[in-house]
Image 1: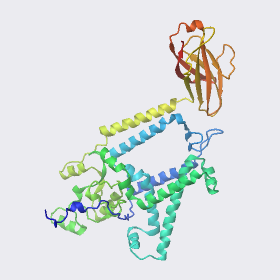
Image 2: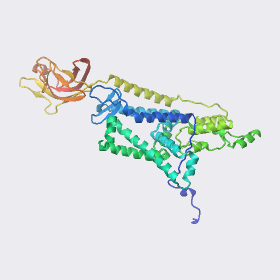
Image 3: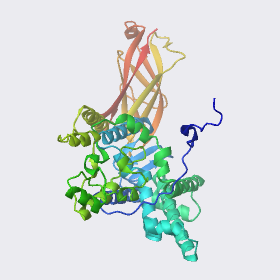
Image 4: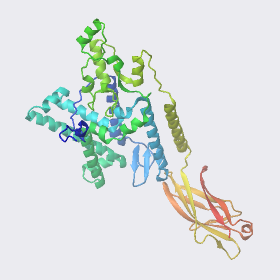
Length: 485
């Protein structure tokens, strides 16, 4: 063994890559416009939705979107979700996952490039940074120059604006959990609950640090989606692609013209580096698919502008597939398959889940009934030979007005129903009143006469049913059993 031999280059690679500050350059184009419009829409919805009012009647919150923990309700415009209906939240999460999978199958990381909160807030913070400190070259120059009073003022202004946005981001979040105008007044006067200040502080810190400092590192190192996306994609998914069949071999403008005049090959890429200058993660898209690429399309806008200036066709960088680059290099026509088994399955699943949720919302009742049979004793034999069973019955009224129900039992002959604490005239079904938006628990005794009980099996299935006295369609039922001996 040679102890003085040079070490293997692989052993010298660092375990962690040192952070390299990214200075994205501003760019104009169709994808940049799309990102600005989506940014304005997403932030507009997030910041101002808590102030939208929605009339639900007297005594009910009139905030359009509200997560009301004290009352254990979730209000979304005309929809009211109770704790018992948490499966709707599960359905929404499933639907969101399927939409994300579909987006990935059609055009890669569309979510990451345009709609992810990290991308949206980072874009906003970059915009403020350019407005205060200037574009790419100015920022690089200022970071390498001696500090001045003017520079200190720029830095202070930038970070103050970042903190204000981060603070309002945290403030807007807590407004979804209480009446927005009332909570704002309480926060301003120092009378808000401590938990509100805590969450505003947490979200202010996370927004300020993630969008202001960590930026692309969140996408590259912290977010699991790039790794998941790699397992979900296929060869037909469109991705931001450098069309090397057109771009190679690279040559500067004058050199390329000379090569073409001599009949030698020359690609359209002029090696200007604009695609790297505008990239928010600082990658070179010409190196092919990379984990760092969020596929925001800004390199497409930058490249198209350069191609227009040098008189070459646009689309050197575009949403495409590597397979199409190879096909064009072989002189074959490109093939696009947005509709294929994978995407059709996702679309079908989205339609199915949406249909099930819509049907469930359309057919759900505003009444719920639960019945629990007594465990000890299961049955009581009366002195006249009759048999009695006891039950705990819980009624739920989801409407915002008081209601009255009649209670009936089916499945056993000639049952006598007694509700403890409620006087019921002989021969009539018990009537139970329940307040608005509340539950009521009842103690119910069901008795079957001796001659009827003699013909019953040891255990019979019974159905408890309640019917709204002002609408026979507003009923609910629950099943249990009746023990005869």
